[in-house]
Structure formats: C-alpha cells, structure tokens
Length: 313
Length: 307
Image (cartoon, rainbow over all chains, first blue to last red):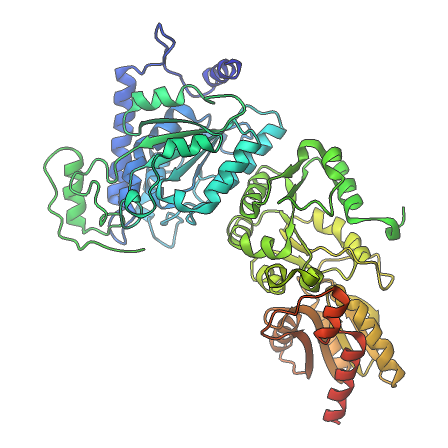
C-alpha cells in the first residue's frame, strides 16, 4: 500500500525505530529488542503491583494491557516526552481508564513522568488516581466512564484528516467496555467517515468487572462483528511482542477503513496467583503481600494471599 | 445586511468563513443548516443519529483547536448525550457549542419524547457551560457571534421564530436585555415566551400596572444584578419560561436572591411536575396557561390577594 511506505519513512525519521523486514517482507523483531521490551514491561508490572496497596488499584486489567502499552509507546506511537504538544504526534486514548496503573507505569519507565510520582498514588498532593487525567503528562484525555474515548478519538482523527496530517489515533478499549452502545455508534461513524488513521486496540482479557465476558453478554465472534461494521480487523497475542509487531506493522490494514486489533490477553498476566480470577479485578493488598507478589512476578514462588477478595462494582 | 435579514445559518456561515477552526456537526438534523454542507465541505460533519458520538467527537475536535458547533434536537442532545457533554466537554472545559433544536414548547405536537423542558437545568448544572435562550431568531443572531468566539462551552436553545420586539444589538454574556421599565411588576422571561410577556405587559398597563420586562437572554452566566434590581424596584417579581420549574429561571432567581440575602415575592410561570399536552404551538401556550392574557390575569390576581 502506498500509505504504508509513507508511514514507515516518517516513523524512521522520528524517534521510533522499526524492526527490519525479512525476505517475505514480514517484519521481525530481534531477540535483543524483545528482551528490552520484556524488561520494560517487567518494570511496569512492578509499578502496578506497588500501586495495589494502601487503597489499591484495578490490578487485573492493568496487568493484561501492560505489554500492549509498553509496545505501543516504545515502538509504534510517534510521540516522545519532548513532543507532548506536537500537533503531528500520534495520540493514544485509554478508554478503559481503570487500567491506568499500566499507563502510569509505562509513562514513568519511558520518561514522561518522574518515577517518584508513582509513590503519590491516591494522594491528594498529586493526580495519580484510579482513572486517567490530563494532569499527568502523556495522558491525552481523562476517562473512567466507559464508551467515551472512541468518539473523542474519532474527533481527533477527523481533525488530522482535515489538516491532511499522516498521524494516527490509537484507542485502547476493554472487552467488557464493548457492552456500551456508544462503542457501536462510534464504530458506525468511524467507518462512514473513512478514518483509516484510527486504530482501536481491544484488550481482550475475557473478563469484565465480576465475571467472564462470555458469561454475561457474549462478544464472540468478535472479529466478525467489527468486520461487519466495516472495520478491518486482526487478532493477535497481546503478550508476545513479535506477534504485536506483526499485527501493528501494517497499518491501516486497508486504506479508507478504520483498523481494530484484538489483542488476546490474560487478566492478571504475570501473577499466576491472581491470573484469570474474577475476584481479583480490584485489589488492596497488604505490604507483605505486595512483596510476595513482586517475588512471584520474578518467578521466585507463589504469593500466599490472605487479603479478602473485593467486589467494588 | 441588517440584523433583521440575518438568519442563524448565515451567521454561522459568516463565522465559518472568518474562522478556519469552526466546524459544523449534526446528528442528522439539517433544518437550520441545510445549505452549509456545500459551503463548508469537509468542515460539515453529519454523524447520523448518534448524539453521543457527535458530542465525543466534538470534544476530540476541540482538543485539536477546533470550535465545533453541534446540532441535534434539544431533548436528545441534552439528555441522550448528557454524560458526554458533562464528561467530555464539561470536565475538559472545551469550546463546543451545543445547539438544541425545538426546545421547550417549540416541540409542539411531538409529545413528551421531544419535550426538552429540563434542558436549562441540565446544562446550567455543568461547570463551565454557558446557557443562552434567545427570545426569537433576531435575538439568536445577535448573541451567536459573541458566543462562538467565547472559549467556553455553550448550550443554545435554537429559536427561529420571527422577532416580537426590536432587540438591542449590544450583547454581553451575562447581561439581560431590559425591554421596558416599570415599577409595579417585573417580568423576567427567557426564550419564546417573551412574545406572550409583551402581550401581558400591554394588558397590565391597560389596567394601570407599570410593568418592567426583562429578556434574560442567558441563564448562565445570569444577570444577577438585573434580578436583584427587578426584585427591589417592584412589588412583584414574575418568572416566565417553557421549562420545568426546577432548575430553570425561577430556581435561578430564588438562588440569586438568597445568595444576596434578599427576599421577594416571586410568581413563577413554569411547568410543574408534568409534561405538556402535545398540540400546535399556539394551542400549547393557551392550554398550559402561558398566553399573554393568562399571564396578566394571574399577575393581577396575585397583586389583588396581596393588597
């Protein structure tokens, strides 16, 4: 596609570096690059776990999208801490705002905010709270009410088109969030407006607040639903960086069509003791449990969790 | 071109010609902007019947420096998309201009689904959002350019009725328009009922009652000074509006007086705990008791009971 080669040229001249391509023109990621991303993601998960005490956080959804956010900010988004106001930057909107610890951690690891700010989680002297807001550099818009930022992203993408820009909008959606009618309204409008600069990324962790998505309002076949709405869709492993690279290297999938990438993920990824647990969505662990979970994250044995499970929604 | 010949659409077109950042959006309501698609090209965005997406997208456009002027029927704009207005436009304090069609009695025979008679309360309740309820088409075009240039979000009750008075061309947000001075009764009104209030004034003056008439124009910011002056300089303060009594001009007048430790006898004309009987506009006005003679009659009765 002609649009694609222009995109690669622009990204190569920016701060992002693209992975090389093999003989079949597929991109591949060097093992060194993969290790680097995994290392960043590991640090982000440490930040998330440290935010899961003294009030707690939505840990399950944060851990599921940690790799996605690290990958997008490190490799895909044309943005950097020095270009936060640059109108030609790419935008990322975190529509499922309760997973913001993953974003805070990513912004801290990549130099958008001081790591020391994370110690102010839930404190009145900063704005590091349970949902994103623009007092945190790098956060493009507040969220928390599900089903909003696809439409806000549509507005930004419309303006980019009006200006003839080649920058793009990425909107991270939760799978539970797809229950909201406004999402499907937005899918119709993005298609009719031919927003091929808009990319929705679904963190398909298969859970919503209290249960598995398929036990409440079944979403599958999800890719077919998006395609029926005129979007071009692909599905990938949201925890493997080489798979993400494959999925995100060819945007848009087709000119004149918005793209959705469904990233299959695991709620609580990285902590086997809370993985895929409906009752470990929001947690408020003790300091000892946090230390045990940090060891568990590093493969040093399972944490013995005694804190009561919480139902907050 | 004089203000008498200007239409809402022409004013919007002129503003769009002067300001590249202005975009016009609609949720498939084109009656007031039917000629703009060909003039504005890609700066005219019709999202279809999708009020929530329109308002969210307007916030996104405003994030990028645009001033979106969005159109939908007032009830669906302010209620279906309320949380998008409150959360995306209000919290971020973005200069989105929300234009609601057929507000209040203007929905005439549509029925309660279309009756935006809580829109003022809802919009005034959102921090940063300005609220303009013009008396007629002329009042609307007088206020529009100023509000389009304001950095604040704004809700506008669209009104295409012919003018019933010659309006002051001077428009300042938060300043009411004093149509007539008077010392016995002061009638505060917003929107289409100014016409009935003018009839009531003629009626009252026929019976020797000196009547002050104030077209509030904006409910937020509201002209507090004028409310206080009207209350202090007359024997009876009257509020007239095609809106529920809760959260409209009556509530605002009461809050304003209380804030300034003033007391006054207020006679409200507003809808009390019911949706109005759908019918053609003129019949609705009479059926609900908002015609000039009905307003005058109630005022005379109230004054007689007090004396």
